[in-house]
Length: 65
Image (cartoon, rainbow, N blue to C red; front, side, top):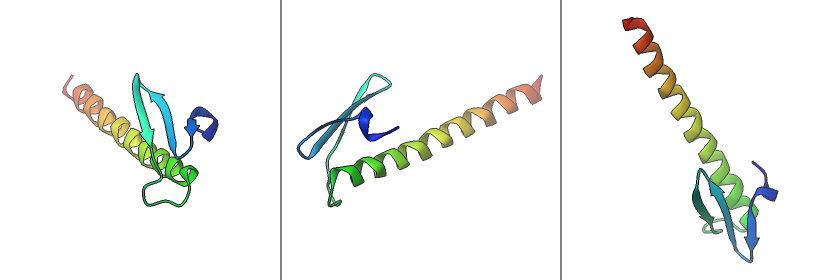
């Protein structure tokens, strides 16, 4: 993900992810770019954890075969 994937208007950034609109505002950050990077870092962790969980489910299913 990169900043060019976002529509930034003033202090609000918008992006479509998996059919859902994501809205990011600076909140506790001084700049919108920092808030976007923080959201992207959290999203990357969430996605990695999701894939790891799926891997555990698939491994368990394969071990039962």
